[in-house]
Each structure stands twice: as structure tokens, then as C-alpha cells.
Length: 192
Ligand code: GRF
Image (cartoon, rainbow, N blue to C red; front, side, top):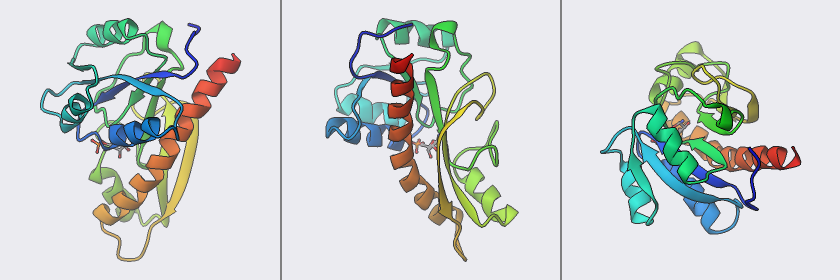
């Protein structure tokens, strides 16, 4: 799949609040990320992230079936699929191999996999006594939280940290890392 777009068109999939979507909207809006959000789909009709997308006048869909998701993404002519707090495993069709990105709030391969999301990740980090955590943006494959790592950032675990305090520190890093990973992957694809 080659693209005629100068900036990547992003198809965003989410299940939750859409904080990651908001960060992408902020950064595509002010030009820090040279990309555009073409549409947002969620497996959950009530996801607050879908509401955010609607408030921005974006194309939105409530979709669960992978075949419906892919035909919508093809119709939207997206270049990259950005998982933004999307809790399902998405089987990737050949046209989009190497074009689906995820961000996970830990230093993968630590603390990833099915069911590891949100505060469960940060609780696991604290329970393990890790002295640092961070976030990982990666390409997606057929396994949860698995695929080539694009960008990672580290944050310290501080004495007395709660899962919520650690989550906040990690999310601030995610806000830098995900746009950087999107730009990097787009650059790689353009170079061919
Ligand atoms: C982020 O922390 C990211 O690591 C994970 O989902 C979270 C965003 O979800 N993949 P949300 O936007 O708060 O629902």
C-alpha cells in the first residue's frame, strides 16, 4: 500500500475515555504532529472518547467486528491505525501490516499482555518493586502488546507511589512518545 498523502491520515480505535485521542487532536491541531485524524471508532457505544470525537466534528463509528472496522478504515483512506486505549485484539489484514500502532503504559515486554491495562499495569509495577517504569509505542501483530518497538520512554518509580500517581507520570511520557512514534513510522513508510 503506497500513499499519496503528504501527512498520514490516522484512524483511531478506542474503548475508553480518549485521553490519548485528545492528545493527538491537540498536537495535530497545533501542528506539533503533522498528521490528521480521519475518524474514530469504538467497540463501546458509551465510550467517552467517542463523544470527544463527535464534539470535534469527527467521523465516528461504533464497530465491533474486525471486518466492519477494516472496511471503514479502507473507506476512510487511512494510512495508519492508532490504537488509543483499545482493549480488543484486532486481527490485522495484509493491507495494514506494519501500519497499526499501539501504546502501552509500561516498558514492554514487562507488564504487558491480555488484561494488562490501566491501573493493573501500574499496580503490577509497584508490586514487582520495579525502580522504573515508562511507556512503549510499538507496531501491532497477532499478540496483545507485542510487535516491533518504535519508541520507549522511562520514568522513575518514586517512593510512596500509588498506581494513580505512577499512571499520571507515565501518561505524561505517553503524550510525547506516541506522536513521536507515529511520525517515525510514517517517515519509515515514506522512505519505503
Ligand atoms: C493509555 O494509557 C495507553 O497506555 C493505553 O490506553 C490508555 C489511554 O486510554 N493503551 P484512555 O484514553 O484513558 O481511555
